[in-house]
Length: 321
Ligand code: PEP
Ligand code: MN
Image (tube, rainbow, N blue to C red; front, side, top):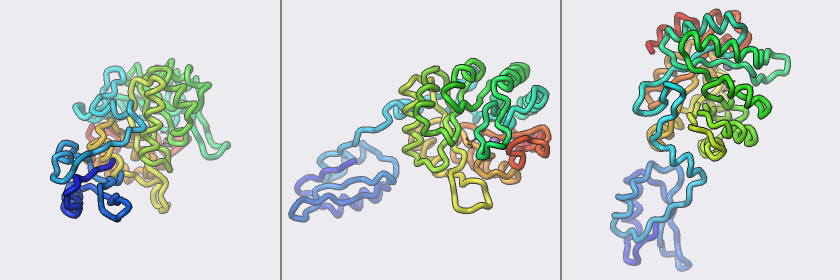
């Protein structure tokens, strides 16, 4: 964004006022070295356009065209998944379930707990992205039907990850909401194939993605036809191995309070250890998250994936949803 000064303006007075509004600026000079305006840096505070235009000495304000107009148009709108709504006007939504759907019995037992804990949506992977090709990678379509039956029995909606274009039809026939995993946030062919089925999407932030890249991934989904996008913060890569990833709550606050987009936080994949999850869940809601996605297992010691971060039924029930 650019601000052009009136010819007679005192640039230092305008600069001080801009700084007072939380805007970081760079002076624009003409060939003689005179300040003729300011460029506003992207890491500035939210802009009060009306006040900006009225500042003494400001002749004109020019906005750069957004690269994600469809995302911007979603600002303030809810995302609806069956009878569940994600948005500022609604109670935070708990999404919970195991990392992976392991058996019909396992998912039914945890779905009962998840429903009792106040969750509205059952999560679980049928197709699992695993860093090692030798790790358990899910029971695929069979797991989806176990999951659907368990969800229906306990009156829950279903969100599950779709990892490839070939799986989109099979997953969307069963799921109420499709999940794009962190590793696929910039798999544009997948984003477009998922968008085309016109369902709501839970879009995880890539572990090394900027906020702008995350929003642009949302733009791909919406442009292709997704009925809504909920942004899921699951931690970005940090340098400290004490926690699995680094939960960027600043980005959550930015999306919820400035861009007014629906955001869910996944503290499970963010920290990777169950003892820190209840604290991070509270912190996430405090910065305005519209929901939480939390992994839980009937017996975490026997989980086939991510057992160290799975909450026991008792802990999940104690979260107070
Ligand atoms: C998941 O939620 O099952 C998952 C694999 O998460 P992420 O994509 O955030 O690693
Ligand atoms: Mn997991």
